[in-house]
Amino acid sequence: MIGLERAGGLWTVTLNRPDKANSLTEAMLRDLCEMAEAAAKDDSLRALVLTGAGNRVFSAGADLEAAKAGLATSDLWERLSGAIAALPCLTIAALNGTLAGGATGMALACDIRLAVPGAKFFYPVATLGYLPQPSDPARMAALIGPARTKMILLGAQKVMAEEALAWGLVDRLVAPDALMETARDLAKASLEGTPEVLRGIKALCV
Image 1: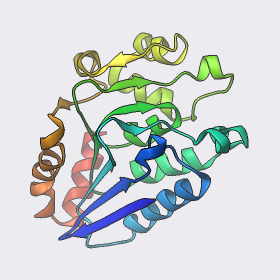
Image 2: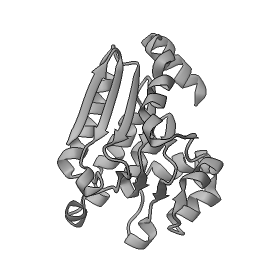
Image 3: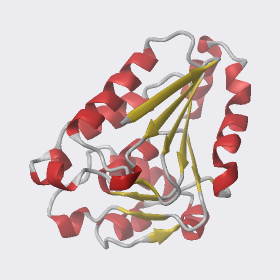
């Protein structure tokens, strides 16, 4: 249920469970971790795009039954976001719809976030009774500041795409039919780069 397409140094990873709001099972989460870790060792990789199937939801986070069994607080989420953040290439989250819960971490770990108009962003850990992934609050605060981060994490506020853009939570709003084309266009320059240069540029941007 995790799709992987490789084309000339560009990896496109797709959460492909649209009938379940692209929610993740433990097996899917492990597959994502292993893909991201394998990508770090592939010298042909120049850019990675992460997206979801369908036109409404990027991911609702943990699958409901899996969450009840403990997946919502699994270390796998942090392992995944850490692996994405460590990739020595351009990473783009092409958010085809709403982003919720634990899935937020993988998008925050990307270098660039594109979103479709009408997408919603929420991470209601305060109401669910558990902590967010360890790295998520800091990554979120680096983008939108501590007060707005607390609005999302402590206030459980839903943020619409337009407000998320104004805050800096996403970098650009793109029409659904142009989302993947825009992501690929953003990746073009990196596809012409070398691993050493891409790695060096990312290190300078921290």
